[in-house]
Image (cartoon, rainbow, N blue to C red; front, side, top):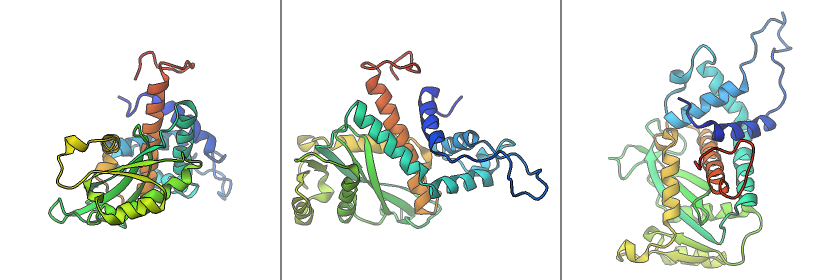
Amino acid sequence: MPVLPSWLTEPLWDQLAALLPQRPDFDPAHPLGCHRRRISDRIVFDKLLQVLRFGCSYEAIADTACSASTIRARRDEWIRLGLFARLKQIALDAYDYVVGLVLDQIAIDGVITKAPGGGEAAGRSPVDRGKQGLKRSSMTDGYGIPLGRVLAGANRHDSPLLASTLDLLEELGPLPDEISVHLDAGYDSDKSRTLLGERGLHGRIAQKGTNVPIQATRRWHVERTHAWQNAFHRLARCYERRINVIDAFFDLADAIITVRSLIRRAWTTHRWDTRPHRRP
């Protein structure tokens, strides 16, 4: 059974393949000219999707077609080239062109996940008996399309991460004149309201001590996106230690989520050759 349906993996691979530099099958620097053939990029891409989706180790995914060291080496090479970040941005641009990002309604929320291996972004989790954990402060549009995230230790509060999360808006290009930012009660403070006011943003902040159903606005979109991201077990239980690797897996997951949402929403309004027979 494939890790993801073909109608989702094929457009992702086609776009990533267009970004990859041309490489010879054999290493021209080998003194005897008889080095082993280079492992196909498509095989490595499929292996990375398996690692992301199943959350297993590289050694568990490795086989005779591709070793664990090759997966890691190719992953690091693509990170240096910035391919995962570019893939995510291309998916966002395509979604914005076909469907349209809802940028006048922004939702921000933090979530804590496990990080058993520790690492650069890990910290003592206050909800897991002090074990190592990872917090991500995520930002989505009004539908729940992931726009970016800030990684920190699990012992960090949501409110101090608000400024760095809002800085991600600068990477989105032209923005609407009026933007509402939906936040939960963890951001209910004068400092958060001052920060939003200085940036010309309208805060829709839940108040502490008030029942949630009464003030449930459009904040649930980011909570749904957290569930989408946690379906990739490499993110829900992160063993990676370097922030750039964690960000790369998040960029790949966000690209998958964005393309999947694009296909689902465009299925009833557009026609293309590889369109799924049923609405996914």
